[in-house]
Structure formats: structure tokens, C-alpha cells
Image (cartoon, rainbow, N blue to C red):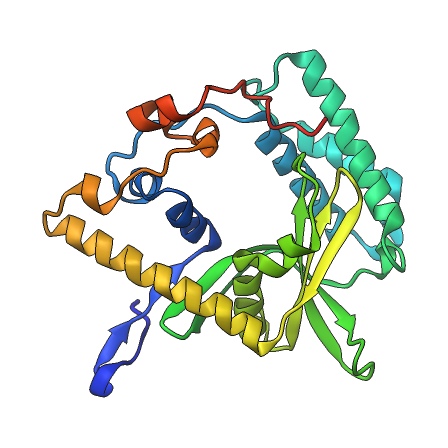
Length: 292
């Protein structure tokens, strides 16, 4: 079903669906965007990355943990959920060998156990109203949508008589995070816009929970800051739509979707199909992104 709004002189205009992943790919490299979302058949992607496998396990464990009854949310229960999630990991998981995989399984258990132990108020008091919840809502000229790791309902600091929603995003990467990561994240801002429209409750706070260090970086959005992120997303959506439509009309793919070579090419899932990317950065081992 098409989503529309009244555009110029009352004419219906189709809204463009965007996810943070699509917008991030477009901003990083337009060639990668084309290969990932437009080319059919899609090019074969690279194999699994160990850090992605690790992140998936941690996310699955925390989803299952917070779905438990509050009285059962102990650190040991969290560690057990990691073991259960790890049971689904395939042999082709990106790790160098079984010994390395075992070390990081134990590390993931420690991360998750320490994390739930350190939560303000305790894990039992976390009121999660969404766990890997898909949210979507029309905002301006786009439909902002995506899957949120966790949505909490908490008492408002400014008005304790009411509750507000908080967007929580788990991170397991080796790079330490800063407050700017929370403030400047377009993905988190779009999640706020979609969450409050989907669940019909106030939402302005975003939090990055970095499991390797236990740090929590937060930012309280204003209407102005959300508007800035929305406008950026709308501009990117317009560019994507124009480029895709022109390509379908016979436009030159190399002109419409040029590469953006750089160090990030080492991590690109479609680098084997891009001569520019192969020359721009060295091939990395599948476990190069693991936190030390």
C-alpha cells in the first residue's frame, strides 16, 4: 500500500520509506548502495565478520533476558542467555578458530553479566515496552522506520508524574564511544520520531549502551535537533529517489552511483565486486573488528 501526503498544489505525493541502514549506506558510498539495494541479482557478499557474529549474540541474549520476568533477571541468567544465543552460531562465524570463538563467548558472558549488574535501579526495574521493536511512522516527506534494540518506559526527570519512552541501542564494537555519538546519530533520532508516533507517548532521550566498557552515553533531543536530523534524512531520500529513478530510465550507473574509496573499503561486504575498493584499502581478516 502506498503512503501518500498532499504535496504541491494538493497533489498526492508518495512518501519515501527509509531506514537508518539505507541512509548510512548512501552517505558512506553510493556504489555500495546500488549494489546492496538496487542491483538484481544482488552481488555475492563477503563472508561473516566475527564482530558482527558477536554483536548478534549479545543482542539476542539481551532481548531474551529482558523478556524474562523481572524477578528472574539476574547476572547469572544473563550469562546463560549468552550461552543459549551462542548455540545458534554457525561454524562460518568469522572467528579465526574454535579457541578464539570460545574466548569471545566467555567475554560476551562477562559483558552481559556486568552490564545487567550495573544498571541503574537494577535489571528487575527496567520496564521494556519494546524489544527489537519495529517502528515506522510518516515524518515530513519520508516514512522513518527501523528496528529498535530496546524501548524503555521511565519516569520523566522534568515531570515525575508522567512517563516517557527512551530509545536504547546496544553497541559491542571495539571503538570507545563519546557523547557526540549519541547526539549526532541520525539513526537514533529517526528512531525517536518513529517511536513516539508508533507508541503514541513522549520520547526524546536516546542512549548508547557500550557493552565492552559498560559506558552509557545519552542525549535528550529537542524538537529543533530532531528537525535537523529529519531534514537531512529527507534530503538523502530525495537524492536516492532521483538517482534510482534516473537509473531505471537508462542513466549511467557509474555516474549516478560513484564510489567513495577510503579505509572503510576494508569492511565493505561487496568490495570483491569493486576494483576501486580493492585498491583503496587492504583486505582484513574476518576477526579484525573484535574488541581487544
